[in-house]
Amino acid sequence: MLELLGALGGLIILLVAGDALVRGAVNLSLRLGIPALIVSLTVVAFGTSAPELLIAIQAVIDGVPGMAMGNVVGSNTANVLLVLGIPALFSGLPTSQSRTQKSYVQMIAATLLFIAVCFFGPITWVHALVLLGGMAIILTDQFRDALNGRAKSKEEEAPEGADPTMPGWKVTAFLLAGLVGLPIGASLLVDNASAIAVRMGVSDTIIGLTLVAVGTSLPELATTVVAAMRKHADVALGNVIGSNVFNLLVIVGIAGLVGPIPVPSAFLRFDLWVMLASSLILIPVVFWHKDLGKRWGFALCAVYVVYILIVLSSEV
Image (cartoon, rainbow, N blue to C red; front, side):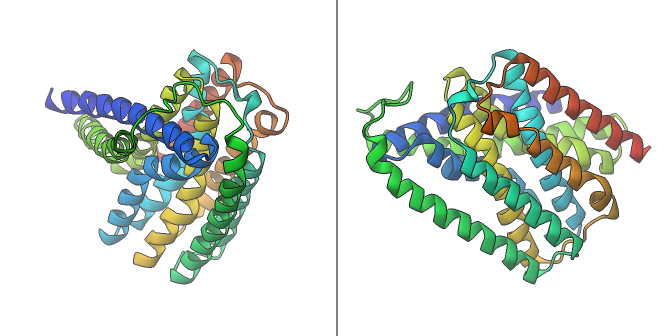
């Protein structure tokens, strides 16, 4: 009973923190004259990836680096198929107007770089520096775009829900509430859900491959659901793209500096390619300006369910 209450409490914290982070990010973009997409690719994406970072570092320190790798790959797959699929399934995402082509290409490039590094694994400090170097290049490019976008954004309408009169301290409070609340909520939910799974006799391996990966994607899901409700498709899509890039290049990069990370052979044969394929699914959305409607949401969620069933069956 206590575990159930703890899990529900974590979910509530996630939803409240997700709302705060979206409010803060949108108003920060308005205040700085930077497009909301750029903010979602940095502040929002980094904040919602905090649980993966904490788990990856702790896993390497505790001598179970496989958990770090599984968490990142599983989270990236869940980010696309579930984090975008669930909001689309219930309300749809108006992504046809989103301008995410460049950041999407960067995500695919980061994914290919990560897969290449994995084939030269185990991931050591040398590989980690390569991944972090890739992130530095992307951040430099985004910073340049942000500077160029400041003048243009002044001519655009303020995003829906943005408040031009919101004081700076309030914007900061929203951002801090989101950045602090999201990892706390995710930790609370994952810990209690794991305890429930253990009580049910589920193995640690299956919990790591499924529950932890999904649990650490809940901040992205909470943020994307709130962004979808507020019709901020740029924030929703940018959050997923930014989180996936951050997961692959920064989380594994930092964890690789803490200690070597072996790459399971099963990942090289299957999981890495599923992660890449799930990212490529978004090509029509990004380049052909398609809205993520309910049919898209159903398809994405269905693909994820099939993937989880395959993973579970391979562990039996």
